[in-house]
Length: 113
View 1: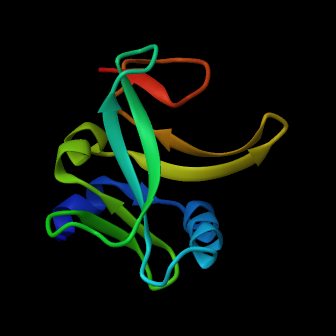
View 2 (view 1 turned 30 degrees about the vertical axis):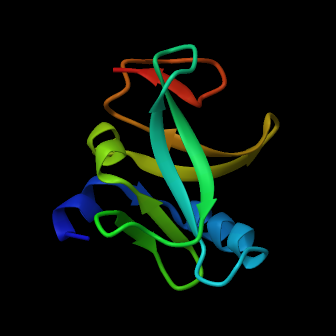
């Protein structure tokens, strides 16, 4: 992890709290991986997966309880993004405010650049 990359993607306190809650029920040392894949109704989509650990070149966000990993390819598409967790009338979900996205779908998990 390098300092420049860490400053480019931010996880809010609310997101880290929810990640810690999710990981409590998983194997020790597990991470929540956030990645960007091709697909979805807008061209790219966010994916959230529990993984046993990070890869060597992952950006790591969080702490000992809230562990987030983002791969280098996805990081290029997430530069400057803010990862949040919202609980509102529409339900609970992770929300990514991505300044690189020029359009997104109604569900908030698909975007285009």
